[in-house]
Image: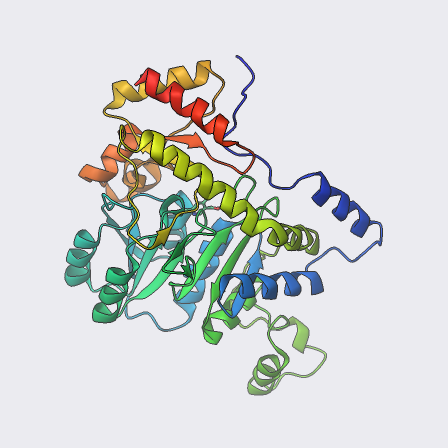
Length: 389
Ligand SMILES: Cc1ncc(COP(=O)(O)O)c(C=O)c1O
């Protein structure tokens, strides 16, 4: 097989980042989670516009933490949760792992997020305690209408912005709409800490639970006042207090090494977002007229990690994929296609087949978008696609 010339994902951790990391390592710092992590969390919060953030070891862990914090918060009226058909397996898996009753929703034909007409039907029928929204591929969802549904039906909103860092709606960043929101800092995403994830929230109760659940269920990572209040409530002596477990937690921590990388990535995040937006706009201009692509609402700003598009039919997709592969351009299915067609779902609940999500499943594909790609490279890739179509 020919070596790939254009990869879907390129490392955003460059030589300067590595040199800075080596310089810091030569000071022989303590590498486990500590002060650098707290600094990274507060700098991330400031960049995002949400007061509280919890750094963990992946976007999937961030989703797991959100679902578990929600469950333990006592704020759910029931365990029903609406989940998207288009997203990632770990947008949905924690609901199954933690004993929720997940109900799958069709994909929206504009943003490919939750179909809000179908969501409304499901809200009326099931009155679920929670809704999981995935901001699909950095194209912001229809947040005004979703906010109106939230107000009317009173559910708690989890927002998976794992592949949408840098997207915005009328100046408000994606990842600030959910009661809790998750982000992935995996290699090739908008920004990388090698592996990594974050949960951000404005809610102190959720934040305290997230901090405890990330680290075994202990209270050591809480602010001193909250920690002391817990110690007093349970009449715990000083010797025991660091090792008292208030919740059945996990260990989903990352390290100060990853947080150090994250601080460096934050310095160049806005520039990387600008490059991804530029590339996305070129693809949109060259291919948007010939293919079905996501259609963001007016006032939305997209920030994608790949450019996703739908072929006319599976046959056309096969033709395009072959041409791309021959030219050394990496491609793949659109996210996970329809999650309702995967065995992890169908083995439990039967196939969840929906007209639009199935179309994404059978005809969708990705083209590379990363800050390392120049406009000329994007034009070259687009030409290959158009010729093969
Ligand atoms: C929508 C979505 N949610 C969650 C994840 C999981 O993130 P991670 O790979 O950091 O676990 C991904 C990964 O791409 C994703 O696209």
